[in-house]
Length: 118
Image (cartoon, rainbow, N blue to C red; front, side, top):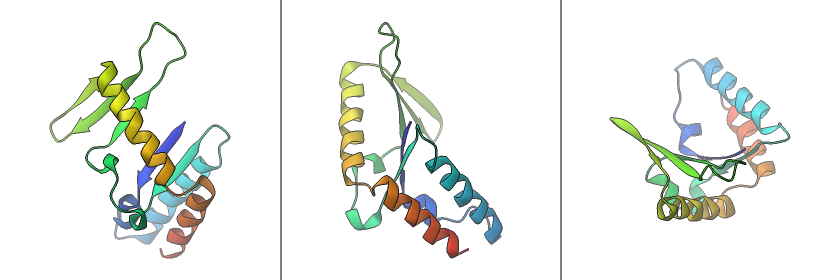
C-alpha cells in the first residue's frame, strides 16, 4: 500500500488536547513500519502538487478482468472513476507526488518531530 499525505494534515490539530495528536501520530508511525506500506509526506517546501485539488485513492486489482479504479470524495458525495483516461491522469499525479514527496525514511522523521511538539 502506498500512502501520500499532505503536510497540512500534520499541522491541523484534530483536538485541543495534545495527547490526541500524539496518539494519531503514533498510529501513523506504526503504520509506516509495516512491511507492505510506504507512507510519504508531501512537504510544503516542495510547493503545490496536483494532488492538492482533491484527495483520491487508486485501486489496482490482481484479477485482470477488474480495471484499475479511482475513488474520490467531494463535499456532497463521492465518485468511482474507471475510464482509462481518468485513471491514467490520476496515475500520473500519483507518480509526480511520489517523486516529490519526502522519502519513507524522512517521513518517519517528520512524524517523530511533529509528535515532539505535542
